[in-house]
Image (tube, rainbow, N blue to C red):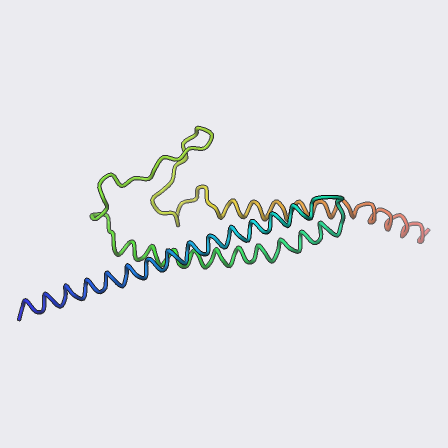
Length: 172
């Protein structure tokens, strides 16, 4: 009788671990698909930026660039939320599955360098304030958006000045 209970609990644990493995694999596949989509959108965005900025600069081009940047950045944020949500679920499975005692010996992060300067990172990507794809994407979208706004203002200055002088002459 005791052997049957132990056999059942072992069977349940095995089934549970198999289910977790399937869920974990699916989560990793979804995360990879989202990351691929993020960079695909970025690639199309940068190609669009190149097309718009090529040729003669105009107010219309910079306005269009600003209005294209906003919805694509919203898509980026949505994908980021999805990736983080799925990553959190995968991290919970990892935490359950592999506690500190089960880590293989020599479990350390690889050393990473930029311009021969060692970059430090933690074992937990969710808490690491270091260099991430997300920061890079924020910079790309933000810089291009600010550039388009600045160019729009620069191109609008002559029109604003003309309106100012025309208005001031009318009220003399």
